[in-house]
Image (cartoon, rainbow, N blue to C red; front, side, top):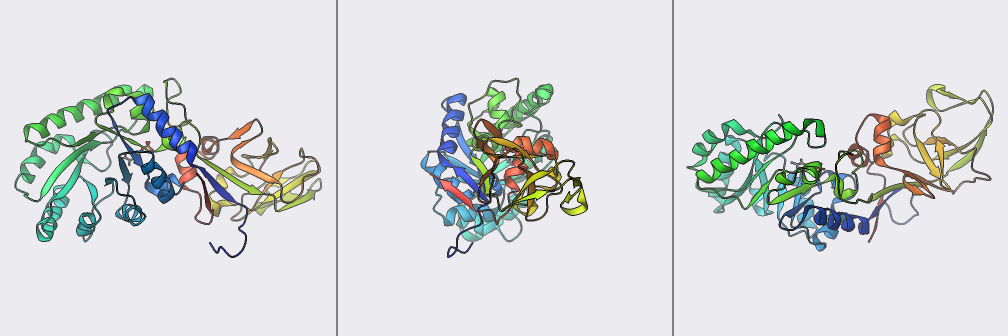
Length: 379
Ligand SMILES: *Cc1c(COP(=O)(O)O)cnc(C)c1O
């Protein structure tokens, strides 16, 4: 983004006070004695990983979680010194970079364990790894019922040390599947026993993501891995029926009106002419589109806020523009402020509301904000 000329007014505002408040609120809800891993993968769910991690480290979170080595490296380059676990794979050739940048890989196969052991021997270091178990997610993770064989096989690997045991819940956000989450917790507990019998006492033990940490106290272990709710994305992540911490949305998405125009009866708006005016409309054209992450599936269905009033998107969302119905806003002019996610007056539009319309979840809405949307960090 060139800094020599004023920016387009489409911006994501990141409220660091809300971020720190959410961490404090979640910690208070969970109670003392549990470490807090801040999950900042995917550019901190679209919020800006570097700036958010710097704030979170100052606020005292003990650990960071990322999805790729590249994400971890980005944090290290920007001064993050806390332990980092990388949930993604150790792709062949990445081994020494993990050691160099003190990034702990979550591993889930014997092949990777052997490769890391061999690389560690060559570098004269110890490869510290977290073992990721599949207790029912059916995604990456060593099958819990293959742990015993795995432990026998790695016993001879002298340069590899398991310092953490983790698993991931498939449905902790759904109380009707509480039995299944219970089963995952039970499988994890017996796996931990097996590990201990093999003489391995992991420094961290972690099962819980956001809904796990809030809803299942027995899943909190020695550490919780918190992503969504830390960013205030609680609405569609936590079951409504269960008590939870007070959360504030961290991100708002704003822009300004680029153009106001009259649309006469019978005239259409946008690609495909999917909207035709049945009355005279005052339309406001906004400089945001699907490339900014305002997804096309919201066409004709979502609202934006102008002066605290909801204004409906009219016609198709295009790559760079949307048009909204501003008939109810007297004397509206170009330059008027618009909120697409966030609050204006007494009205609020959440990422979860947009996700509900587009058939997704709030995480995908914030992750999906385009790279040309500057993140403005308010500290
Ligand atoms: C993304 C992720 C989390 C965080 O989940 P939230 O629901 O955002 O809290 C935790 N653990 C693992 C392994 C993850 O991949």
